[in-house]
Image (tube, rainbow, N blue to C red; front, side, top):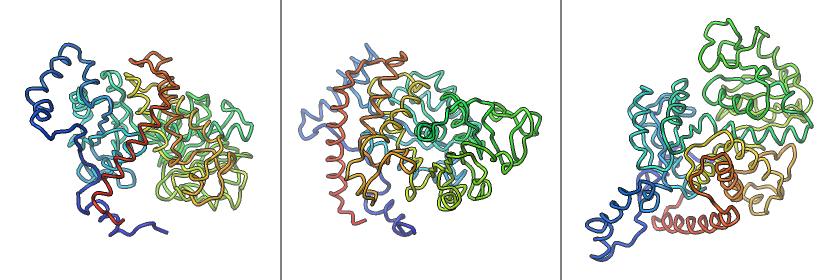
Length: 439
């Protein structure tokens, strides 16, 4: 059942102040002195200091807490290539999530550029303004080259959430699922339905976690990807099997994991029946997964299953990752988000799922309790502890891998994060309440 009507959703985006974000001054500007310091002539003092040392832009401007969400609208989730203007509500929404979950400010940058070189040059040109860049809803295969080039050529974190978000969250789920079932990651057979940006990034991340590349069986719209098949090139070729092992139904037999990043009804109950004991299914097509959760549990209650939906256990939700990954990366002034940091995020998320869940979190999800096990291997997105588990893990990994430009006292950092979020939520509530919304 839908939680809202079409009219309610449109009113949410259009009532009173239009859209979902605004810029608010955080310094007083009530007197002539304030005005002189905010702009001319007082602003020149900050300019001179930054001119002497560019790093001081992090001290005298908002750069250290500012992320650009950059999109050309060519692959908006569930909507396709709808362009930058139509994609802007999604990017504003991303900004809301950054703010409410990690107190990170966002300027969404919706650009008329389909040429990868134009996207790359745009991002490079705005580097002095931002502490990090979140690429969003850019179609494959262009998104791979765009991210790769920007990571190489920029000195701030660049992260394509469509690629790595699902990888990190599902990776956390895999760690816990394997612990529960007693399987070894190097032994599991993985079947992937979909060969887009997220599917390829997930598969690469699983390999970095220990899955053998030859054990990944990837299917696109034309079937299994294997050497010699037409249309197997670029990044798909990295997961080509040596030979054609058959249809999706045939390859699913004995599989230990199914990852779905394709379309609804991609698999059926018969395919599920043939999977190994204690198998894992992450059916992430939205809004309708590759197979409905009840259909899986009807024939295989032993399977550890997650979807992209909030109304079933083990939601694979990217909001468990990107706000906290950027929070940690910004606070230690990381120059990049590397594999060590991504793996640290997955491990931190997995570890949090083993902790007792506070009663208020259970209440928010309408359940009496949440306990680590087959139906709870991934924490809930509304659990505020995700911030204090993931952001410090990111900062620690950045420092240990040599990409941090600022050393943090991690114990003190956890306290700072808690205080920061309390203040941010109070400011945000006061701002929203001032408009008198009745949604």
